[in-house]
Length: 110
Image (cartoon, rainbow, N blue to C red; front, side, top):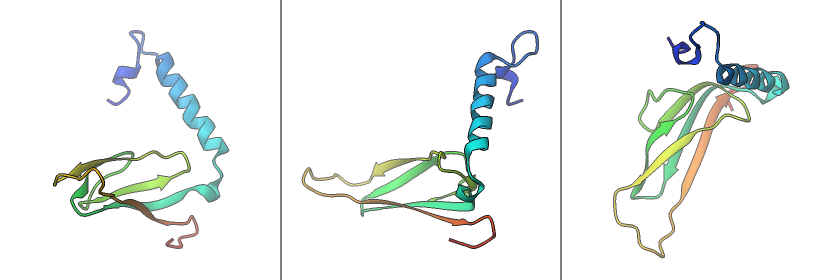
């Protein structure tokens, strides 16, 4: 199971797992419910020749180029691995834009 590596030889949770759980609980207690976004979809747009090759974070990628996350809070981290398909010139500017569509807790799409 997912905790198999977080259990010591006596079957007790390791110190690292306990510390992580404590941090998650602390975060849950200080996060205001109004700052939580639900049903989020994040998309990264880039200049021509540049693209988001993959997303990494607490979500699933059901559609190419979009990351869906059940609930995000202000401390949620995402990673987008950028790749370029063409050679980039030294003086050429590239642009990257990240956007997140979400629902408020009362169900309004934002």
